[in-house]
Length: 229
Image (cartoon, helix red, strand yellow):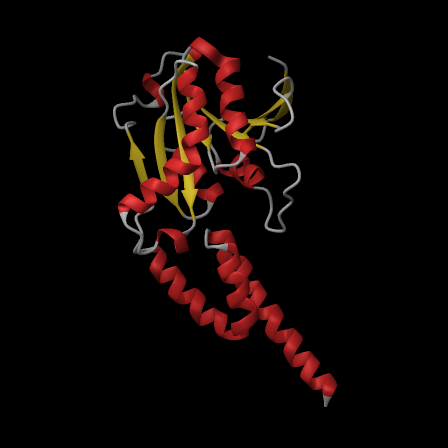
């Protein structure tokens, strides 16, 4: 009897967690869906269907002050339009500042992109979303402004890797900059790796420890190399 109960319990949790991991990968809140997965078990499948429906009710992308940027085929080859993923972490802030230092006057523009999970975005007012985005980007904006740069701000709702790659494919950017989180190993896979697999433009991956070594990843899959500024 106890063996049957244990089998049912383990199956319940495994099914629920499997659904939760899928939803987290799609860009939903980690804590909410892990709790739902364990508590709801197989019934989390129905909740996932509802979540997928709600995704379509949320605007995917809001971009500020970048609509006047020329497309890639209009770009002067010696100027770089940089897109940086910013999640409020020190690693992300360090990455965009390091890249701005490396490229200096070659930068045409810098856009900071913050991705919010669907559960945070759903039902939230525009003012609240602007505040969350502003808080995540504040440190990077302060430092870049001190360097004489005026970064653009953008936000997206959904999975971070998917939304960064989608923005990269818009034709408005020439380089993606991401900070690596060495101590944050996720069972869902690295956002950086998934961006590299999907992005049509090159990516610059900067480790958090120092500026001296930055790994440049060709997002088209041609390989990686070490750059020393």
